[in-house]
Picture 1 (cartoon, helix red, strand yellow):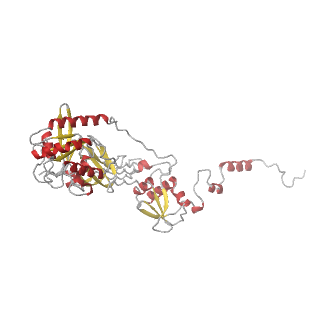
Picture 2 (picture 1 turned 90 degrees about the vertical axis):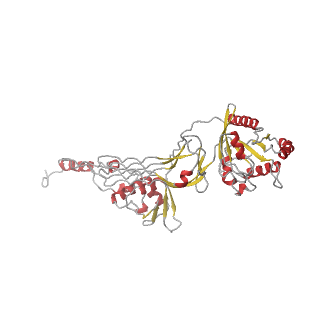
Length: 483
């Protein structure tokens, strides 16, 4: 028996970046070949892709964990590691991606729409890429970044033009079965429909989709019955059809009270994507008029519903009375809604460059420990993740990068003292300023550093002048010559 799953929680893990390689070129008669370590490959991303051939989230219900392939490590002779392949997860049209807190990350509609659920880690640089004039033969390489890991909630909100709502056993499943080729379960007991059913209806030259959701009862918007789980399937519908059972024998129920109860539940339900269902066009279908008492009741309440501005159709799924008029009326309403919508624009790439004066990090005091500080920022945390702390040269390279970024100066301005704990990412270390005078002297631009004034080395100009002075003939008379 097939199952319909419209809400799952998945755990996605992107691939880790490959480590860089620390290698030295070795060749006969070339003792100083130089560094030739290649870079590590980037980890693979996890991407959600809308596929028109997928109609349920059942696959994720049984396999909620997805992990992409990591990047390969770099090798010698300037050979870079291979990048990890992108892992594509196929989802149905109308899938909404949310966080654990309910924040909407993406609304995936339209075949081929893509969303990067988790980004792969960057590959580490090899020592060939780290070589510079000051560091000609680095004996270290950067580590690859770990891939992003996160938990996501996937909700399927059906993409249909017409949504059928009504009480249990109102005849919604029978209506969609006679108007389309859908074959839902039909029985004489309530809550026969446990999953949404979709059908395609053709009326003349118009074609539209229709969704049948499980029956609603008073309090469905607060979680009673099955309504709360499936009300989201009518959020995207252009037209809402109230299917009313005119042949019910339950006390206290009549078509007008049923419509009022349904409208109250729709008004209380607020879609997570924003907006309201109150502005959607409504159509009232008085069903089962093939029963004599039901036809009399439908004739009696038709005027009251028409005064509210609601189009009313009296139909019978058993005798197929009024179904043709209903289908053409729904087709006209759907076409009017499609014409009123703005034309779809092609997706554009949005670039958000950082501000010119943005430091890229912040220094705050650690609330858990007095005298300690925390450095937060994308670049400092990424550099710490890429550093092999068992290599002293790699640690020195990290210190140089942090100093050039301005972290050391920011710590001094925040009141940090030598030896105080500083946390960057998941690493805590004792801060030792790189300036000889500690925090009293901060690094400045070259030429403005006051330490340069204490240089006592004799320059080439002074040595040349002293040499010329020694070689020049003396103008003083020799000793003992008094003439």
